[in-house]
Length: 110
Image 1: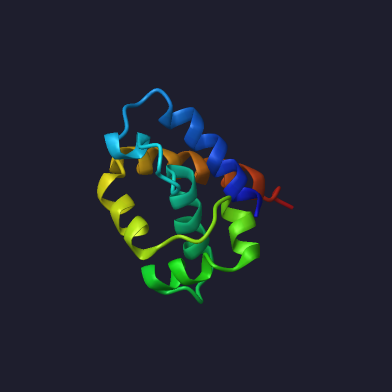
Image 2: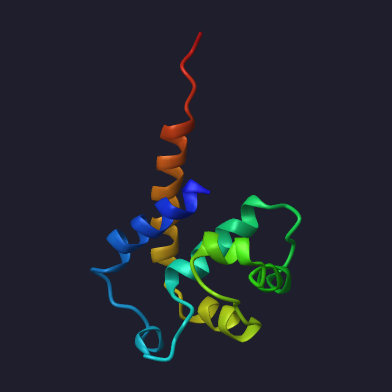
């Protein structure tokens, strides 16, 4: 999924200049913004996944781990990320992702 790779690049460009929640800088943290957002977007693009628990379950699949760029995501880590994530950052990242996807998929009028 090329969109998820683009998402990671967009996130780095938008998030780096901003301050993040202190817990996101903890050295033991394994779930990063990009992993969380990639998994979240993966779930939005796959209608079979209908819940946070479902997203965390599919994160055990090696192919999904390759796509989102991290190992298994626990319910606790996923839930915590929902509370420390800056919603404005999320909005900016998804707006930029939408613009890129839309420009890549526009069809020329016949």
